[in-house]
Length: 161
Image (cartoon, rainbow, N blue to C red; front, side, top):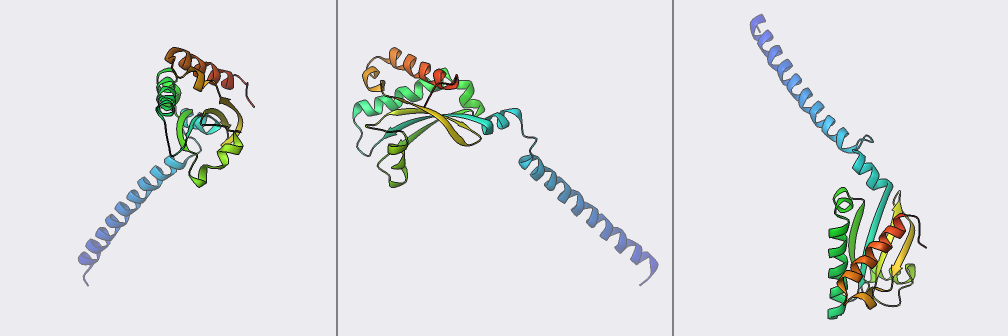
C-alpha cells in the first residue's frame, strides 16, 4: 500500500475513534449527572424528608368513602401545591382489600377506612397520624379541609405517633 492510502486510512480511523470517544464521553456525562450525588436541592430534600397522605379504602366504596378521597386530594392539592410539586409530599390511595396492602390495617391500627398522614425521613417512617375525624367532618368541606391542614401541620411540626 502506498503511503498516501495509509495516511488516508489512518486519518479516517482516527476521526472515527475521536467521534466514538466524544459520543461515549457525552453519554457518560449524562449518566453521571443523572445518578450524581450532587442532585438538585429539591431532589435531596425529597429523599431526606417526605410527607405521605394515605387514603385507605376497600373494594366496595360508598358515596361517603368516595367523598373523603375527593376532599383529601382536593385539600392537599390546594393547600400543599408547592410540596406536591417539589416531591416532598404525595397522596396515595390504597385498597386495603388487596393482600399486599393488608399490613396497613395493623401498621396504622385501622378500625375503618381512613386517612393517615405519615412522615418519612431517609425513606423510613418516623411518625404518623390517623385522622379519625374525617368521617364526622365529611359533610362540612371547610371543616374537613381545615382538619386535614391542621393535622398535616402538626405532623410536620413534630407531633405524631
